[in-house]
Figure (cartoon, rainbow, N blue to C red):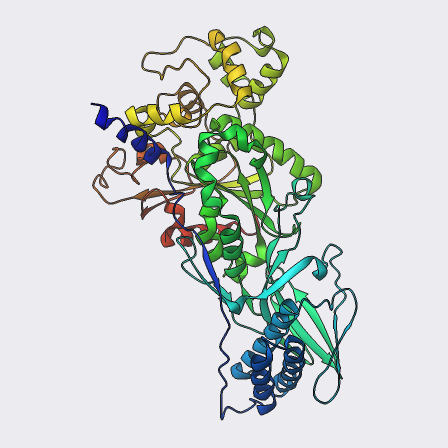
Length: 555
């Protein structure tokens, strides 16, 4: 028997793993982009070609001289843009030259942001400066810029490159320092963002401007307005490759207390009060990175960009999900103080994130508490600190800022795997936080008697426990309906291994969550996609989310 013991922890980890922490979810490789001239194309200037070619020859050993040549090429290309505004080859020349300006600035460690920079060039020096920006917080001196065309990207979550054709050089802006105010501003610890650079010339002065492709669709140069180019994939890929969130999923599952400070709402873009927030919530042993394929695809659609902004809720997934939901409610309270929402948000919850989302649109008041303890809070004899934590997790009403929920592969009634042998072993691998252990120790003997067949524990439940169908909380919460008036949609995965004719049977499943657990009566729509548990990454599911969001516009 001894030689079989190692297989048990492994099976438990497989239960807990919806994403493999060993998989490279994003890979980036920087390279030297290749310039392809377009001979004999009307409007393509030999002056542009000569400037770019000379700049590329000098870029390694004389970046300042290369910069002068790129400025000459960009100016010549901008003139051609006015003469041939619809010529793709001219546009490509302009974009390439502007991108190489930023390559030279980065490689030579130049600073045209705090004061104008004089650049020697054939025919006279250029003065390189930046356009004053209406965004008070925007200061290009705080970032390093790399043209997006210098990156090859890939990885399990970055399989498609979402770009928009147009004028301007897409850049990856990476903050030079950590954002010390990220917590109170609901931002990222370090900025990784996509901007589009535009160069405008007046004589020998080149003015560089930075546009946000998630906020601006067109750009004006001279007398013409052009669609603005953008790369929505590379900035996210650079962020994922740099921060490696796949290494955090399992750690945050097994030792949630160590990563308590990672429970937070964060914005993926600057706050816009006129756009609806889409808040995505990940599941067990996961991170917000799991939504990369979905967000990458959605951002490629102009109507989605115009009407929506993407935020995420990240949390240590070892917490029992009622506790994670309580933290989220506190975060939402803080968001409303810092960024009052004009429009109700759309919440997308995958897997256990769907269970958290369900609690945002459920009214239990003190009824769930009474089911758990059999008496009101005033009569439950526990310390004030522990009582407060229990009340936050068990007494709540729906969140008024939520206007729709999209449930994806959500085990709302639990998953049998969590209550089986592997699930019980997996549960024991999760290290309970000290504060929750204290609550369990004090409150355990005060609970109402368990009905026959209920999961029996001698401690406070963790996330794996709260995914068991016979868990006390799971059984109790499913006696409460979702709040009327808040529309919701369901997307479920089916591996196609049978049971489609009768979806109430467990054999219709995504491999982890059976249909009977995800089924939601009253859903505005329901779609089954051919997928395993990561249905939110399935192309059909992504198209369904897009359809739902477009229908939701204006609500």
